[in-house]
Image (cartoon, rainbow, N blue to C red; front, side, top):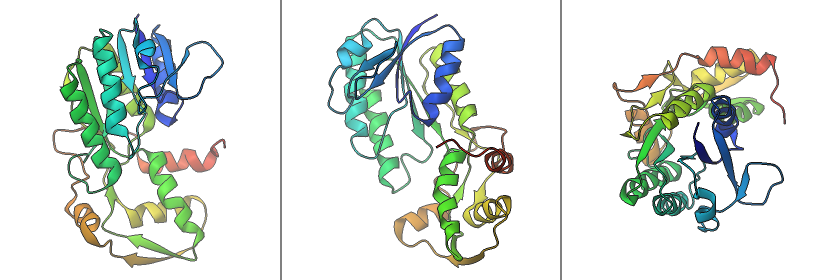
Length: 254
């Protein structure tokens, strides 16, 4: 059993990882920017650097799930330095496939965060994952409100089940620090028109789809597939079709 500090523990990924770690007998602390009632919560802000020394005091490992396109590198650097000073033996961080290649703010913020972690001196592991099924749903399903749906054929994703990413992270926390490990992507590469049509079919919607070209550097990057996993990546097993079947049959709780 280990003592683990989790950032982003109440987010989508965190809600899957935290029960797994608790089920393994680990003692968890969940970092929150605002004070919360309940056992296990500690107040702290990674970007501001507030409360981190207290949050990491006495923990064996840190699982860093929180992040955004603004301040992610600063927050990760602050957390890593606090972990190093506090004698934390392992910091595990989630990142994104294409962090160093995609010309999008969120990706580049993750690249800088990875660099800050590597430079901190704390023993670490980084897992780059593809976009979650939920992310693809949230990106594409609102487009189906339009009578004619733009379908950007250049965009291809390898959506991954959030539970499979959570299970991999739980294993990594229990393992020794390994630097950057093999990326984790879904079992299939799917383009945006196919995903849009699958969502429409699952909901019984009849829509017209208009092919569109994604311009600029972002369009070129997607057409070149630089957001896709390398041959060395590991792959989950849950498909986009399986996700949609469950998603439509079991509506998400607001």
